[in-house]
Image 1: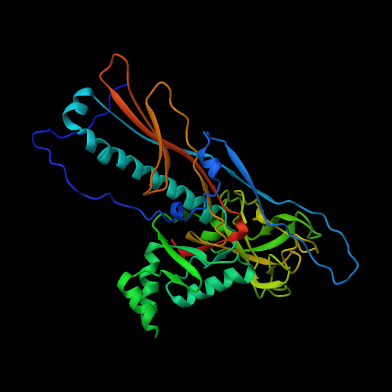
Image 2: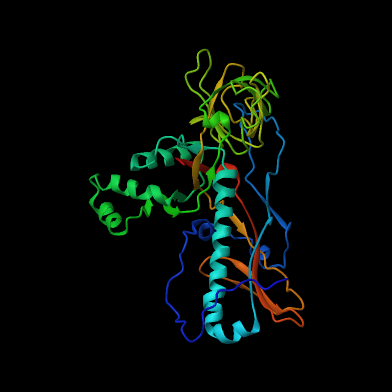
Amino acid sequence: MALPTNILQNVATYQMSELAYLQNLNAFISLANTKFKDFQKFKGNLGSSVTFDLPSRFTSSDTLVATFQASEQRAHTLTVDQAKNVSFAVSNQQELFNLDPIDYMNKFGKAAVEELGAAIESNVADNIARQHTYRFYGDGITPINSYNQLAKMLAFYRNYGSAPGKLDVILPDMVVPDIVSSGLNQFAPRRNDEEAMSWELGNWHQADFFQSNFLPLHTAGTAGQSAQTLTVVSTDDPTGANITQITFSGATASDADAIKEFDKMQFDDGVTGQPNMRFLTFVGHKSSENPVQLKVTADAAATGGGQVTVSIFPALQSTAGAGQNINNNIVAGMQVTVLPNHRSGVVVGGKAMYLAMPELPEEVPYPTATAHDPDTGVSLRKYFGSKFGENERGMITDCIWGSTMPDEYGMAIIVPE
């Protein structure tokens, strides 16, 4: 392998600078729940998994005569399925004359860790905010730029059911200035003084607010981008016991990109002859103010007649039982709207955003060290070595990780792209 072309300045003219690294807002890494301490420490590899339990669900009966119901142990799995490395190589002369032993790690090593931290943050943000949410606030068209919208967003989240304690809210960094500016016009002197000095939202309404410049962009299918209204034709379970697929009409005929994985859709209110669809509260099974919202779990193409069959999450159940989650069965004639292209922030309750980064084994026979970086929260491995008989020395910094969130604990914050 040819040595890469390195740009190392001549030692006689090169002066070390004190330029800071261009930091990113690694909110997801810093907020993630890493309670699986043993999982963090064992020598793992890609594919390593851990399963944790979710609260059980039951339903109640209006009688003193017991009707025993099945007990279902709900579980969620976190799998380490991601890997990244940053590597570079130098000649022996370059290492000797250009790389000071102390600044070798301060300059090159830290830069490698910063790059890994950015890659992990971006992946976790996409996995949590885009892939593991089915509920959402915002339509992808109207900007979110006021405290009134934030208050409605938090009420919307809690109305469905919320874990005790404060919520964590991660917003796009570019929307925060407008929200703060709108708040300065309100008569709240103490809060306004704090925010004017920091220009940050901080703690408000039993929620901690954070910013990210890595929130994922979702590219919607044609139905979302073209604002098509889709009409229900049928479902895979007419009884309403377990609906996981819905067939719609109204898509562009023979469109291979009609619906894309992780598109989000909402049942429309005010459809003639149809009831307004509402989620039931997650606990208690009472009708909430939340319209029924779904995420798409696979790409779907439209037929020549403009019909498209969409796989959805969560499964919809209108029949009585622990899994009942909607107030009416899904029937022909109901309509849905699909979100256009958008960015996704997230509201999370119950510290339900999980991140695992097991240590990697030693890379024998090369000198190896594993460490946890306090700035980015990255558990990583470093190893280096020389190619035998060749003028080349290389260093590799790498890591593996996995992240997840039980979908019912999160809600996407949808902002225009």
